[in-house]
Length: 567
Image (cartoon, rainbow, N blue to C red; front, side, top):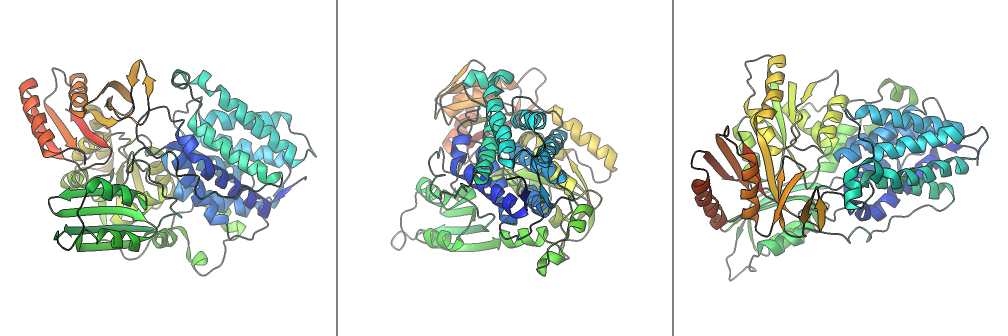
């Protein structure tokens, strides 16, 4: 065929998203670092699902309208660096299709060249050997070899073939990939998307295989098998266990495993006979029915996040069933969502922090953070999550503390959406401890410029670390890692040692972080740390570090046994 119109492009998009969904655990398995994080494949899958859902019911024949609608869906659902970069690639592709009802092979090459440029521009320090390299080399090859009147199939095959060849070369550009023996996971995810799009062009639309994503679970809290359709219900409850003669015996691990198979963003905290639960799920009734076998509810809350999403995403025309015209889309390529009227009282400043775990949440609230965005290493929040939080605080100036390197891009994307409407300032904190120390330096009596400088400067005053379990055998920078052992990690990526016992990993980490200038050590214990272990930590710390103050508190965070900050 010679051209692609809007309806064919829609089918290509959905086929690409389905192909990624069918194989995203395979992409997750390529992650270099053996930590239980949000995972590249999962983040890209959720991002693509958000975009494809927005176009699935559109009947436009205009390719630009489909491309721009898809881009907006990706923008709102983008999670993690890989998801945000994917959204930027397709944002650029849409920009390259402005004023076009259909495109030929030359238009295809022009659109992907635009996608490459926009994606690179979105990343402050582009790294080669990543998804960026794959899209750049593939689009460059297409632009070099495309010819007028070339069939769309032939042109797309050039793109796909070069994307796979570029992916195979990524280990030559990133030494850590070669060391571990894998290709770049983000690039692999992009190839899955392009493969699905090309398959549709060839007449073989890729259907979604609903059972395919259930294979590579490493940890019930770290890798939930929740497709998210996309948002579901934010479900929270406090339950009192027992009495034993009327209710089933409660086992926290079994309870957590069951709930993790029905949702994500799961936090389960038990304090004697009280259990507190937070989970995002499509079927809150199933969660409530299961939980009530073990006790009775003290407090319940269930909010429809899908409805919240649509209230933010759609403008008044969408709400009345009228699609935006092409001219309106051009006026607002990154149009901000209309904000609801029911808000908190307007104020000058607000602070928003990404956090997970009741104790960590409470710590941020103690130091003055106004709004918590649930998520972190185990589930990266989306651009839309930040937009909702910004709407809730209703302030002229909003500081965001992402507290994870894989979340900063999504926060910045929310800032871009609201540019000219709300002054959003992203403080590039990469760890929880950086976020805590930075937020503590905020002073509402100072002006914006001084506060921003102080918050950024404070990041360098704390040394951070964490202890978590390994999800696979690996060797990183000479450190041999065994599955299920505990790793001592400096900052966010530097694995310094691996140990059978979590407490040994903690003190190995402290040995690297503490120096003669250190004064205070803060340790936030995870949901897997009991009181006996906390007492052992106190005794050992007082023996080894008599000259330091220790602030040991329950963080309640999943997956990470300890979050450590040294000031």
